Amino acid sequence: MSGHSKWATIKHKKGAADAKRGKLFAKLARQIEVAARAGGGDVDSNATLRTAVQKAKGAQMTNDAIDRAIKRGTGESGGESYEDITYEGYAPGGVALLIDVLTDNRNRTSADVRNILTKGGGSMAEPGAVGWQFSRRGIVLIDGNGVDEDELMMAALEAGAADVEADGDAWQVTCEPTDTFDVKDALEAAGFTIISADMPMVSDNLVPVATVEEAKKILRILEAIEDNDDVQDVYSNFDISDEIMEAAAG
Image (cartoon, rainbow, N blue to C red; front, side, top):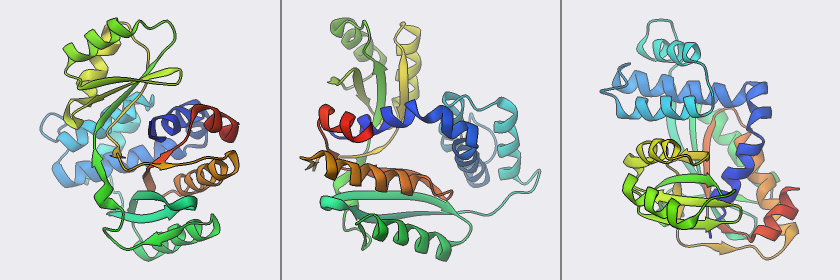
């Protein structure tokens, strides 16, 4: 099992603290602003904006904050001009990284990301060096407490999901990226508790992590990258067991 969903669970647990600092909401607002600038402020006709708004609502961002971000994007109330860039790199142990950023200063952000990777024992990679390993998928994580596998499987398949897989104390439901939030809404309506719903870049070419110390290095570099204001998402291909992940995250 890829470490992506385990890392998503960890981020969900610490999400309240991130929201208090304003960092999470600021990143979500930037995504909404860029989507609105590129495709207009109508969520019904702008699929990218609709996805960004759904992510924001899932993180409990207020409607007022969402509306303000849309207006900045459409030019009704100012706003910055951001560039969408994906950096590629390696974490310790040869773990591949894709780093999505929205920045108003490419040189600053590139230097910041390179510095974080170098300090954490990783390195930048040439464009295309690791990106070929990843493809976008819809991932809905379900709280496994009291969940019957057969009931979840039936509900997920009826909602349009492709697969259901156990992931520690949770269940990972996989679907087409465009179906992510429809599947999430259907499962929520069926009574399942949603941990997260997203459309990450996922790799089947996994790198096993055998020790707690190595896992700590990887998690530290992921946290440092995600703490950068310009970074929107980080995707990786590490494979860490539940036991090692819990010990490293603790």
